[in-house]
Image: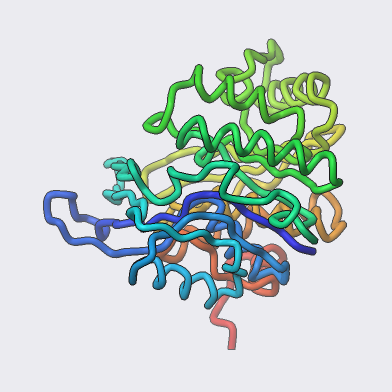
Length: 332
């Protein structure tokens, strides 16, 4: 199965645990939501390609080499003479929260327009198209391009996966809501939580428990946008910056709920949501049952928290081993 992911590939500069921005001591990783998903799905045996823009210099080449090392097809990547987007992460610990500074203005990807591509060529032999709100938030030209791309996908039997992925530092709730309403009529698989439904679609529930509320708003979303087949999300209970509990949800005609996963001593939380989405997609696209798909996504996300970097680097076998056996002794 051929998957096309579209989004800005970024360099992430992160402090070591226990250090602050002021020390100017950073580790560098390649990241970006759709980039992470492309890498993750490539690990699961899908042919994944990435549509982005990168500068024509050594950093752009380094990113392409990174992607190729994970088996991502880079033939659709466009090049220009602008800068590479980046962001800075101060890793929190214990009671101190992490914080992010974006540095993405005038990056290579911000110049993307529909004129850069031929839709028929870009989507040739593509089965699944993945894009997120982080990409749509960059500017109006990109948002308009994404709308035309998802329309094309619906007209050509290409599955559309959209992650609402709201970032308050990139745009307002009002802007995100307007964009989401333009895109949702063409979406097959949606990643969005209860607050997304409430803030962007004005959909709420008067049910009592959280799970009842979530099932109710998901049902309302599907009634308004009947083209959507699946909706997924996670709930993260933050005990401290270093200790979280994660629950996954997947909705078709009913709500499937994962076990609660206790994540202790978090190494790197960035990319955990992308790992969840990629894992659920692995199951669904391979016709596995809903509960397997949900648990695979949750376990992929939990394992992602244990390694540095934005992209997940665990095989199907490693994730399934954790699914069925949990934490165990050394594998000898």
